[in-house]
Length: 572
Image 1 (cartoon, helix red, strand yellow):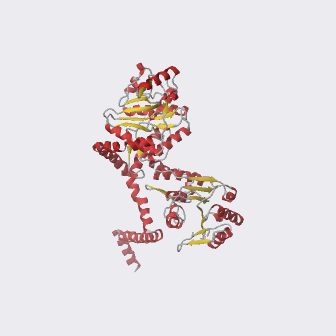
Image 2 (cartoon, helix red, strand yellow):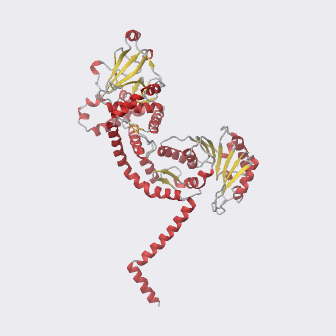
């Protein structure tokens, strides 16, 4: 009999049937597990996991090609609809100029001209509505007709390098100084810059404001930013970045266009630290993020398109005729174009600002603070994830399983989080309508990870999140003056305090908010060193604590089989 069974087993093995049966058995087990997960997490979240693990990583591989095609199609569409676009913006001219008036204009007295030349300019303005003060060359130098202008690089007539594409002039109208840009016959660049400047001015970006538009002659008049370009500042420190320097060097002119661009940014980076400190570069990057949040791709990022205002030393972005606007700033297609801008910024400014590729690489290298001891799993979107997303006890699993529906309305609310850990749930609150979240956390590695998460989510969603850490022990909360909050939360954290501190903290929270959300942990197999910790983490203990602190209206949310129920305490 045994030899017969051995022979059958051998036949099954040879035929591969045994392997097939084993695979079917494992598949059935996996299906059962999947069904169990879907019941617990909900079918929507379960499908989301499938997309996160399998669909989005494939989609992101082909998205850059689609984005390039989409960009070209938008360009072609704008070209074909150019007459409609001009008619549309012509009908909105008054609105455009009204928005432009919000910006401040430079007075002719602030040009810093010598008294005699200033008098000459004022005399001409008495008899004519406008006067050309200076012509601007290819490198941004002003050929002034009234002598040197304070804080602005000037050039003589014999060294003036004529601009290749458009005509730029500084003009005085009545007693104000403005910049006039004439687009010659390029209607597409004209309407493109008009549209982009208007949207960026509305978004509060540091850009010139539109104060005049001539649709017949294709001229935009805008506020004049007194100062010099970052390119010129670098050139003054010895970098060969001016157009005239590059075009006068036979060796550089023999290089390909790509090689000249590489030489340009390498020259700039070589002396960047002597011109711009980290605060300036961070300020400039903040401007770039604002531009992206307005749905604009700059495309043409270079030192010559950054103006340094002479009195404040603040960066201003200029020259938007190559920029492209997108209807959905939060779309994945636009994320590709944002990343192209950001990578150019990283290249020119020796920075490491996050893009899809950089986040993915850092996750793969485990170059995320605290990742070796990860507590709360995170899903950023785009297939980017850290940790086990199906764990409903912590991180994004906890958010979608219980917190999202359990928390009171978050719209416009200010939230206090006691024991914020890596801030993954706190950022979710901001994503779902909260305006500000303050997180109290003592662990350095969680704070470092939380700051990375904030930056990564701001990249993913293309919007800023007002999440701040207070690096301290939550037991010290009663001694801090943080103002009032709409809601306070403590997610599996409060019971790490001793009894006395728990009472003090709860009572203090009752003085700064009317709603306190506390998550318990009733699991007994954790292996806590202090058996009393199980009691402090229990529902009964938390209910008594909240009642004693004045939260008399209590609600318990405890899904069946879930070890981390939530108690919501409110004042009547």
